[in-house]
Figure 1 (spheres, rainbow, N blue to C red):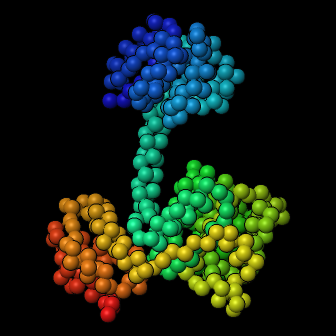
Figure 2: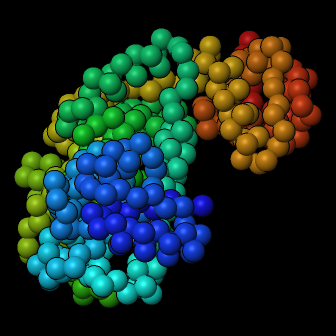
Figure 3: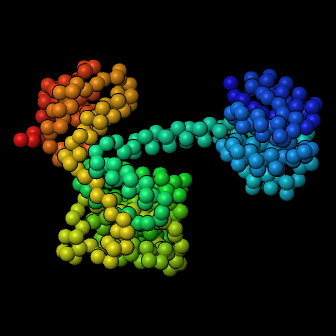
Length: 392
């Protein structure tokens, strides 16, 4: 049952609202002034708070401000018998969901409460989804290399320093980038990922910097680029070693000036973006071969993080496999399964050319095809289709 808190100094208004709301099957609590209202809001979770503006001791605007400091997710609807456009605007500016004038229109009140509850539900669902996403990007492992990366992330994340991440395909470079973002001051702002290898060279500039309507044949409307979309947040340039030379020059200019110009445009747009780049290539060889600008590399590589291959962190394989198995069983609605000790040893004997991504695929296959306990024989039988080579 949804819970509603009514804060009003008039006893008759409180009783009337309680009767109406309980008739509509809402669990309703009352507070006769702002102090009591804030105390109750802090001690219990309410889907909607109705708060009068004109009250003794503490007026509704002050209550609203304190509620948003102490319980920032509160959905507050302000009510007043002295409603004006100015007071309504002030309430909305300070974070109120809506403003209703007295005498209260019953239909308007109930519709506003339903809309406010929808907003509360969306906030709750967003929190749950963010937790799920964060869980998907956990750094799993206890090897010395992984612990060293964790320490580096904790030290670097709170700064705005640019980070250049290297490592083979499937090692978890994106995971490192996301951890840097989640632990930074920019965590509440967007994290935008661009796979430079997946975008044709003729479109990469439009993707990064946006374009104006009519700037090229298919530009039927104005489009914001990823630098704009990531403003105040983090832009992750994955596989930057595959970016065209022309786009590299524009990225370099943006990093120097913190300004972009859309394709086909003339206006300079200020951007505040933290750039994290990653590649699976030998970037120094790419620079020697004139495929990558050395000045751009030096701009991007304030901090260098190398992510080791799975074969270099063999002791983490049992931890990762057990983690993936639990995760996959939950996602597929399967009963919990487990690996035997000898099955872990078989997994450690495999040369993982696809690294963690490949390990996760194998664990998913084992989870689907095997019984409750996954044995060494299961690993031998079901890993073979991937043509993995055992270590000598």
